[in-house]
Amino acid sequence: MGRGKIVIQRIDDSTSRQVTFSKRRKGLIKKAKELAILCDAEVGLIIFSSTGKLYDFASSSMKSIIDRYNKSKIEQQQLLNPASEVKFWQREAAVLRQELHALQENHRQMMGEQLNGLSVNELNSLENQLEISLHGVRMKKEQMLTQEIQELSKKRNLIHQENLDLSRKVQRIHQENVELYKKAYAASTNGFIHRERAAVTVTDDESSQTQIRLQLSQPEHSDYETPPRASE
Image (cartoon, rainbow, N blue to C red; front, side):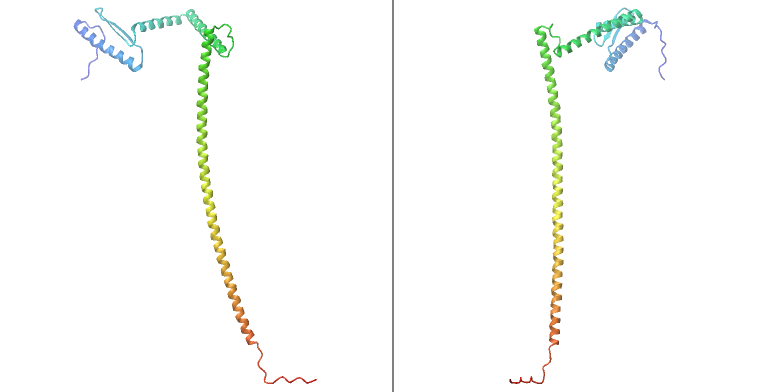
């Protein structure tokens, strides 16, 4: 069976009331610690028993928590009052104007303006601030230049590698062209030789046929002698 619902009312029996107070107090303090740790909250817990005994817990300092609580309550009360709210915002505006004036004056002094009212120590302090600022600017500049140099070096290496690859491709294409030229030259030379051999064969055949025709066309030997010439 589940636990029955407890009626929230004062416990009449003193013993039971004391036991319940002890258990609930420990549980409440434990929950306050967990809330402060888990949620990064500033927690302050104050407990007075029925006998007037004090029990407390503070995540930081109880005094600082109480002071913060009182200040917050006063500000809330002032905000609830229209006149107090106007005064509050007037004070905030005055503080902001002072901060703005101080920043503007510091900026002019950094730019080398309105230095007449400054003492030697103040001028030395301003000079040190400017040197520190200048050193920071130079460091940032050197860092940016170093990064640019590294990037340019990477690009140069990539371009150099691309040039090497292109050079290898050009050499390979040149070698292929040379081999193709050799093959074409060898093929043309073999054809020329075959044509010469065919021409020589045809010439030899024609010569032999001419000899045969010459032999066939020789005159036959006559049976009569040539008559002698008449003497003058």
